[in-house]
Length: 204
Ligand code: UP5
Ligand code: MG
Image 1 (cartoon, rainbow, N blue to C red):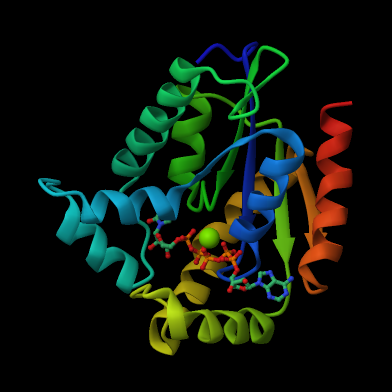
Image 2 (cartoon, rainbow, N blue to C red):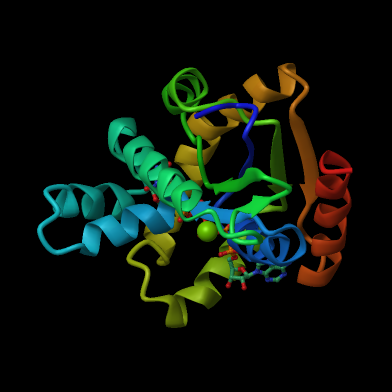
């Protein structure tokens, strides 16, 4: 991708921190194309004829990170599709592509490969709250989400993988001065206001 034509923000934070919820709000404010790596993997898992379906299902249930080649390909394809369609306000604004990449990169190998081969992010939005709060939110969502990883056993595994594999990614970007940490313990609207201020500065 031509770095002068796109802006990419990574959105990270623990399972249930509110990444997807806040991305949906930021789409309305700034016309981003929102790409959730988890959503793309779940769609691929359910796509008839996919050779990766069973593999993805197993990784997600165990809270493990799907091999990066699969996820990066899905993200790249989705970005290309958005740029090809080129509708203002749906991933385009002021003649540039705008992407929120949610729940990625969550392991160092993915971060390095994406930065080298796809493009560099300008900022990492990092949503933080306590593990108790995240657990509470996910158990509640699990009553209706149908997600195979919204049960306590899978959630505990996701927390462990997050600490062991994703925290180093956040530390890496923090050293590069790219991380904007946003406390997501407050109400959805209060967190949204904070996120909007941070992102507003990028586009001002
Ligand atoms: N909620 C949100 N904000 C709230 C607030 N401020 N106050 C009260 N409630 C709030 O929110 C979760 C729930 O909390 C919702 O019910 C919401 O209403 C409520 P949500 O916005 O969905 O949180 P989010 O951070 O997006 O949580 P999610 O469960 O999506 O996070 P994960 O990071 O665990 O899930 P993801 O879909 O990104 O990944 C799932 C799996 O896919 C991974 O475990 C992994 O196995 C795989 N994966 C890869 O292998 N590679 C990748 O690159 C990405 C994913
Ligand atoms: Mg999500």
